[in-house]
Length: 222
Image 1: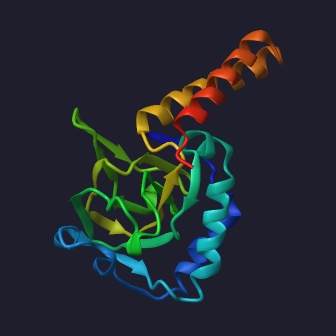
Image 2: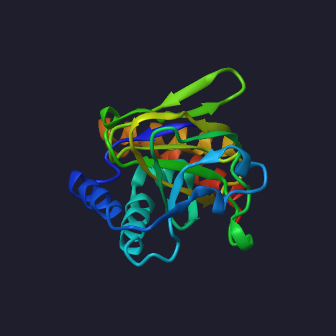
């Protein structure tokens, strides 16, 4: 399941994040890549222990984790530390799959996400391209919006030809490991909440809540 969420960050939070990029120290992004990804990765990432980056990472992670639709879609147990990335002209990231386990075996990566931090017209190229076996989905969202997709997906970032692409990237470990099961739970809850908004508490909304709760109990890996 691939979903886009608008307004994860407020305009003020986006401005704070972009301002922080001017102060943060960056390094070659290949430092965090595996052996195969190093061959196709060409970007810059914030130095992990840079104190200027810490409050922005925390702010972004907190906003993502508390977002209701994100929680319904991913059922997160925890998030990885947020990675701040920058692509300058000529930079790109070739086709790859995210490593299934974070560094040091700290968590399983079930869901990947990219939060865009500058507007699409600030740079040319730089689309996140997700390859799903049928075709390619090109993603370039407004600042503060986020794309969420299974970490098993093959994907790449197109070359930036003008300007800079600024983004926050991370991963979630879900209590429901299987992506198809997460999609079923998400669809059930979207339908339940829509019924509740239209008609209030009803027999049908109760039945959907019961089905969702029973499936979550059956499938949860906690």
